[in-house]
Image (cartoon, rainbow, N blue to C red; front, side, top):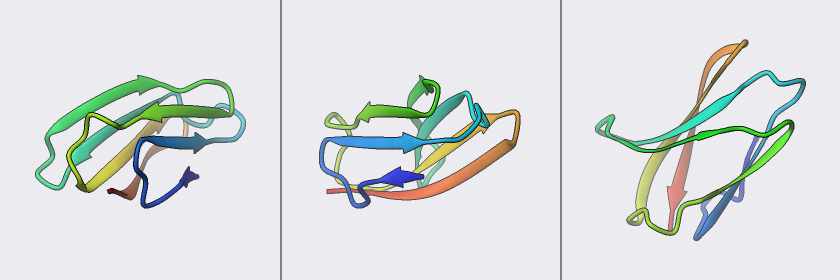
Length: 73
């Protein structure tokens, strides 16, 4: 669902059938860095401002919650 991974500046999130409505990016300590509403099936998120490291993208919506690990280069 999330690509590319690892990423430099942009992350693309693909979903199907409006399963998820928002995405949050948190670090390994649970600190929230970014929150964004998702578009219909594909959304691009700018992550240039994030420091290099490991983050989690939390997708929220009708299908509940889903977490994906992401590395920022």
